[in-house]
Length: 293
Image (tube, rainbow, N blue to C red; front, side, top):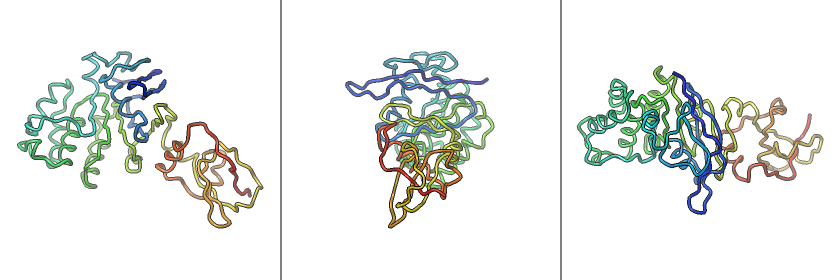
């Protein structure tokens, strides 16, 4: 079965703070999405709206046309693994597995055992005796084993060492049972996740400023170097994200597919996203140019 998660004109206020402002996008089965934004961008509020933990102030969230808020049938189809996921400290690992299996009708017991082995989690250990990394691994096991068509992981690798992070990615990416799932990985640091995600959703100050494939971003962004005294060719100001001078030379971070043939160097994705959000979206910068051929 294919699934479609729609967010349509969603807004939400925390008191006087407009946490989300008319956010709209659509997610389809069979993809791993990245949700990126600086702290305070609205990621957590958005995820809570998508998972039915919050009722939207305006607009709608739907999974195959059905709303998740106070709708048990839809909530069983969505698994949300939060950062510092709440786990009863008195539970043993096996207790957490048994309780989680009651919430998700498509619970995958074989996957749970695989994850526990991969993360080296003893079923008899209690949550209160676990390190932060072990608790994170237990929460990830619940998410990966849920069988939910929609899986949302908030900062999934926080507290994990490099080897355990790689284990999580292997369990997530190399599993054919997830081919029809919608998987969302939320983060404010994209470098490690970019190898695994296909599309990225970017929030800034409560607004959606981008939903695009990683490949498309890489194709249209790059650095151009030239002599800062040259004025042979002027670039549209909106195409320039950053300008830095090094003696007589200038280095420009450019976003324009038509200029890709002139790129001297590819842009780091994290740097690109920071530049896209270090000023109000759509604002222009002054004095942008590069040396022509």
